[in-house]
Image (tube, rainbow, N blue to C red):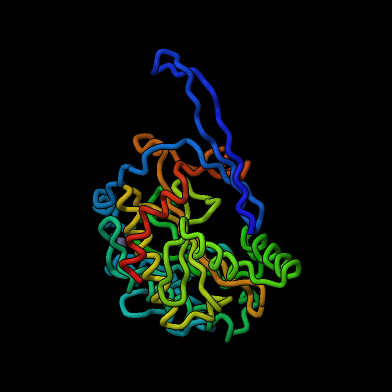
Length: 344
Ligand SMILES: [Zn+2]
């Protein structure tokens, strides 16, 4: 497996050191599967300003549609043909149609009655129950023979820097016959890898990273965790590969618990670096792909300038689709590893 790195240096005269020559490192890396490039540059300490989520929570609680006082009056219901009970529930977590759907069958799942969690402390049980509720929704879509019940997708935006418009923790749970771009790319590249080498890229990646060690975070049950070699996130990405599974419907309770434990570890680890906001996406096959494994990516999000709420998605990221990571993924892995060791 080729982990391609191009090391470069930018030379300049430093105005803060009497115009003395200064040499600044830049790395261009290529993802071993897709060939997508990522830049490791703009180096800075891995210490950020944790957003004041408690203050945001106080400002938004009174009108929150997902809090227990309003969730049954301010959220939509499914048509009876899909769910006679209107909304699906698991304990205190609710799942209902998304008022802003991405496709013909989309839902939102609340992660409990809590309007917000303290920094770094999203309970793994809430995540596991959210995944279970999503699984019930996918199974129902499949049983109903819904035409979009092809790719079972799940995404999570947490706190505003991630793009989330609500503070109350919630998941986007949807079905689509159209795989999103990155999933489509990965499916095609994994199939090409299989045809070329006869191997499953995702299994080879886990074996290779476990052997190298520098980016490997550990195994929690049947999920292998690592820091992405060429991340999309500005402070790296955490990749979880669910061994032996292809779709969201393959997840049993143990697998959901293992995934939740790893996500909780990533959340806690990044909070220690001062990052409280993140995106998560699951990347499933449609079922039966020998060349593919279900995986998920946790990507931390920051404001470049918290005072101006400057997003970390700039023109470079948005239109060139080129990512910048401000620290070496191997160093970030070193910071996260104790949390994964504690969760294993
Ligand atoms: Zn709320």
